[in-house]
Image 1 (cartoon, helix red, strand yellow):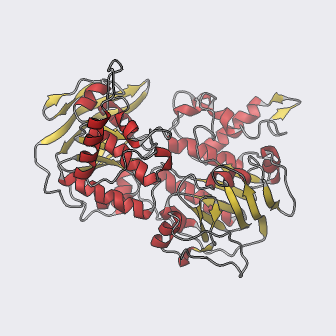
Image 2: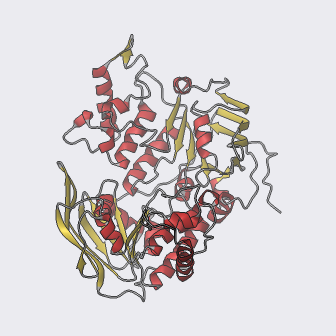
Image 3: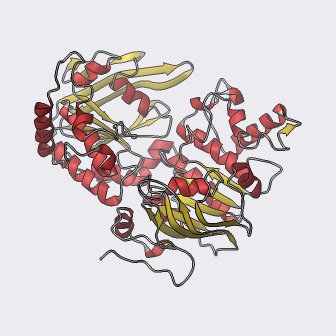
Length: 533
């Protein structure tokens, strides 16, 4: 899609003119004007907090703009009216799917499309419309399949179908490949090509610049709420140019340092955590060494979260052994923190921070009961605030204008909140030594290229200084860039950890999808991969 689609026409289907939006002193969108033609893909890029989400929320009717107007097919779109946006053909597929797992595909597509007073449901007509739309756009779904039984890629197709069945002419895709395997991403790109040929227009939001260059006809870049760059042809524009436009400076590419693994820090043998219908962890074995990054690949929900919780004291074993520096620790987070384990949780909002607490309180959240920040049960407020200020400066946490350290954590952008959590993990207690083990679960998920580069640099530095690092990530580029060894999780089982150079993207993608039977891995030379017959 790097060249304009044959279906594209010069007449804009969607026009945003001089859109501005403020939240108090924060200018989220500042006089932004964009156009989207029929049958084209417009990529929308920008750092976290650049204003992309606000702009799309205004387009979809969730926010009222302070200034500006939106036109669809030459007709004004009423501001702040989601129903009007849907009726005008604006559809949105969110980063987090909004599907009911216990209902069928057809039920999910029909939700909200029929009035409550209708005496009977028109399922037959809805089913026919669903199948006709799926066939037209090259999607393959079973209307009666239960959502909970579908793969991630199939669920995404259902989300897209929900929008298409409702007559979407403009489809907004927010980080659509964030949880897909390489093979599923390829299938999505084929689907997008088919939709564009049918005249659908797409706004493509992604932090993966290779995908942006491959999928998009044009690119618009936001920075600090303003439209700062447009690229009408991507044939001569490389990733470095796009990244520099996003962050306003040149970025050095991530590179994996050559390191020799040090002493054994943590060992897991035949770990078992019960679950239904299958174990959450099934005979998992791994070893973590100082000065080494072990990357864990896998589609979300295959046991990675349980593994991370196990190594932070949140989850207890039902079987097997777990030894940290020669001793067994109880399944209590405080004991693991005291032993030198730092964690970067997968969900920075729900688990990593308390949104209504001040920035300084979140900075000491995991250590407030320690001697550094409390005495006889009383919080040492000044010392805690001084420590938080040091973290803000060292880890370049921004977004505190007007509120300072009292700024609620929920007001920080995703990237800045992640920097705060990163700082808390790596330097959370001034009286404690550097962490011996870092459990980083999706540490750059949803972050822009600038924030990603920063987080990668900090993790590599911690590893170079002696920490063992378990890196759980859905982003294969991140795993290849940072990991010394990579293993794949599927259905609670962990495959053999191999040097990163011995993996290909295709092999990892197949393993993530379960094409190879997974066996537990260790550093033993007797381990082997058993391939499905």
